[in-house]
Length: 86
Image (cartoon, rainbow, N blue to C red):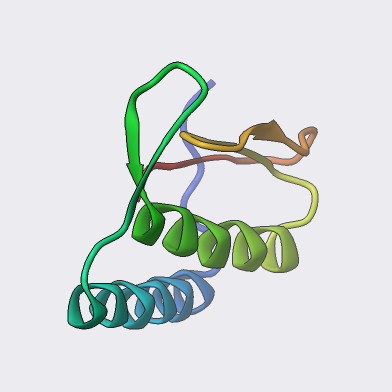
């Protein structure tokens, strides 16, 4: 099945700009790092940016599947599958 074009570039750009603001704030305050259950590190900034992107995608594209590094897979059945790894 061929890929379909992005349905709403404006919504995506808005999400990315919001996540960028979160990331800039993280770097200004300093990076805090947690350990996942498997012992690998994950910066709090990654979690915060991922949360912004997941919320925006769920709101703008509620039928689509979203796969993210920290939160796994949610949704499905829509025309697109979004992969998030901040």
